[in-house]
Length: 91
Image 1 (spheres, rainbow, N blue to C red):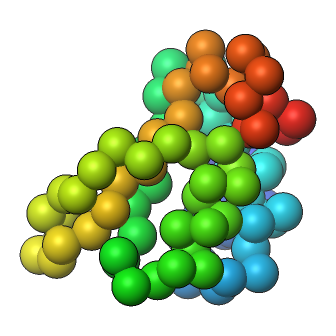
Image 2: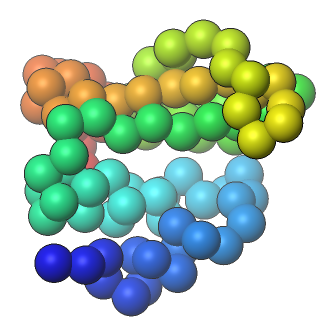
Image 3: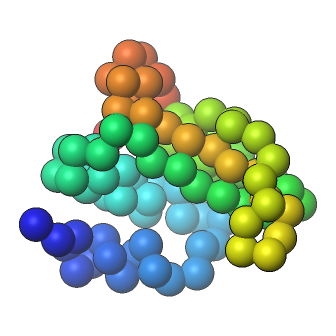
């Protein structure tokens, strides 16, 4: 089973700070359809709007990460946390 085309397009386009609500379908697809145990996201430390959206999605701070040739901040959400009253549980 693949990603629905609309979800795949959303996942591949550049992120904007207004994308919070638009990212819920990706989390739903990842946890419900693909049955992933954990989903992660990375953002540049100076991109406060993106970091705020990740937190609003229920993702928790993992920490700094050097990835894609840059210093980034990693956030994660687990399937267990999503179903335990975590803000991401409203998906």
